[in-house]
Length: 38
Figure 1 (cartoon, rainbow, N blue to C red):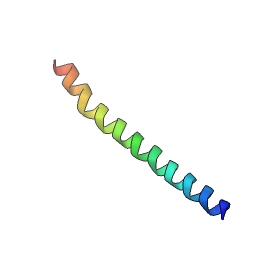
Figure 2: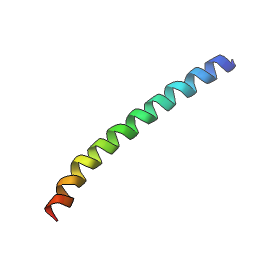
Figure 3: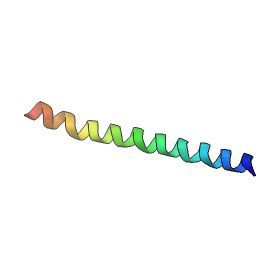
Figure 4: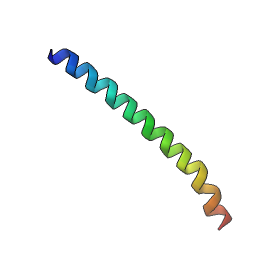
C-alpha cells in the first residue's frame, strides 16, 4: 500500500515540476519582451 502511495506522490511531484518549468518559460517569453519594450 505504501509503495503505491509513494509512486503516486513521485508521479504527481514530477508533473508539478514540469508544469512549473513550462509556466516559468512561458512567463519569461511573455515578460522579457514587455520589459525590453518598456
